[in-house]
Amino acid sequence: MKVFRSISRSLFISAALAATASASAATIEVRVTGVVGGKGKVAVAVCDKDTFLKDCKYSATAPAKDGENVITVKDVPAGTWAVLSYQDENDNGKLDRNVVGIPKENYGFSRDARGRFGPPSFEEAAFAVNGETASAAVKLR
Image (cartoon, rainbow, N blue to C red; front, top):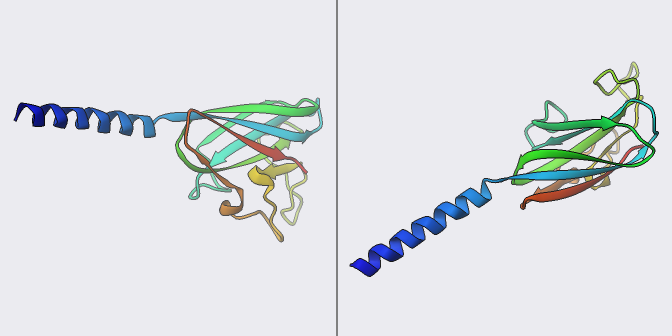
């Protein structure tokens, strides 16, 4: 009976540690290329399937510089996520569009996802976040 309690206690502790590890948050390094330096900010948003192209839960910005810009988004839970990014050239906090809704500022998605007649699907841009750090590449066009 004493051995059974010891094994049960060990299993409980192992299960609790595993649950804590899987619930831990990650840091995503988003490597954005195609940025024109000195013009506004580079904005990134990390979205799950429910918030993709809407109000994403995790985001960050950094001043735009020529070449690759690395923007870090912290405390993202493990799961399946997609990244969208744009260069907010006039620093007004939004992706500017023309009268028919086509973006006037450069933008891009993780996994270099491109839609044919509009934005890509979540699945085309999605990637798994499992550990403490993850990275995503986005090329602005």
